[in-house]
Length: 344
Image (cartoon, rainbow, N blue to C red):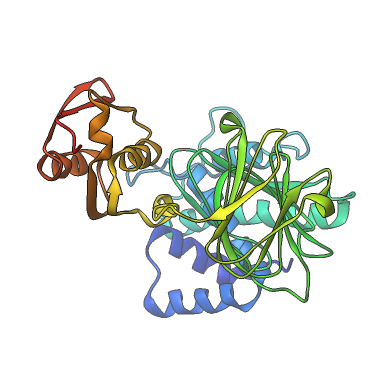
């Protein structure tokens, strides 16, 4: 990976601080788009910057602290000798605020360049890994081959530092949307749970939360091969757009048509119901908002509902259901209980 020159360090710093001019943003965008490696470095810089973004306008950034936090996040802390200033010493750059902001970015970028060089020189059988985690919010990632990954909340993605040199392999825990770019005939492989998903270039989702005990793949475009890790040839199922496959622990893969209008709701922040039975409406709301919902009379589950919500809130949808389905509700902490006459 080629180290960016001072000009692009400066542009990245200004971009992250929101102070780049239109021309500077255009120059930076051109550099990012020039190579997959540039984009990868830029995305990693943004991700690392989030970890060091606890600085407000009244505080002088401490670049030593930023570097220490970056070391911890990337696993370099045990391998790189820290060059901290003597205890109690604070380095002030108040006469040159822009230089200080650039310095704060540089400790991140230099660390990334060091990491890239270290893994290129010291990789051993793909043992060096790069990892991304999305905890309370989604995270968008561009891989070195320019493929796009959107991680859902509580999800984790990792891949070897030599990704895209010989093979394209990632490891997923949780849920993610993939838009995979074709790359010289190289297959793109995802290991999740006890399954393997392989593609050349396509878009699809993979959901594999350990607590759910299952892995599900749903295809939007292209063709996807889904199988077990242990017997990829014997168990392989080919999926085309509009189809999905699911595998529970120690069970066979089941292929069906996608029947959920909202399987991408977590990514697009949009919920759609089209003459949908209330039992499915409730399951969708529970999954999307993570809130339990009960009904006092099972006859309510036969009611049907139509509606579309963008950037939805649970309370907004409940208020509409009250009018549309003629129900009332009570709340017990985070739980909703629907009451009504039903539709039978």
